[in-house]
Length: 42
Image (cartoon, rainbow, N blue to C red; front, side):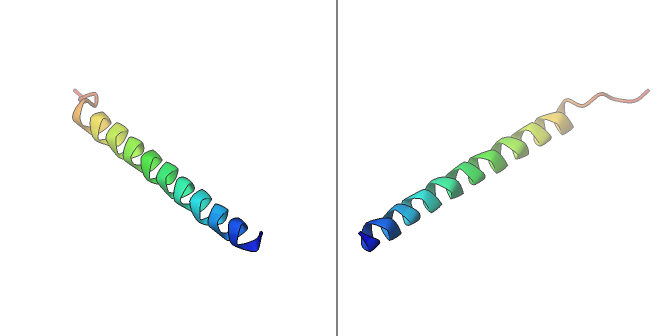
């Protein structure tokens, strides 16, 4: 039982790390596109 719990924690941790990494990639892409296509001041 205890071993299964530790295995499930490891899997859950990897999933949370993957979601965090995906969010960071999306934020970086939005920031880069915002810089590239930003409004130019006149």
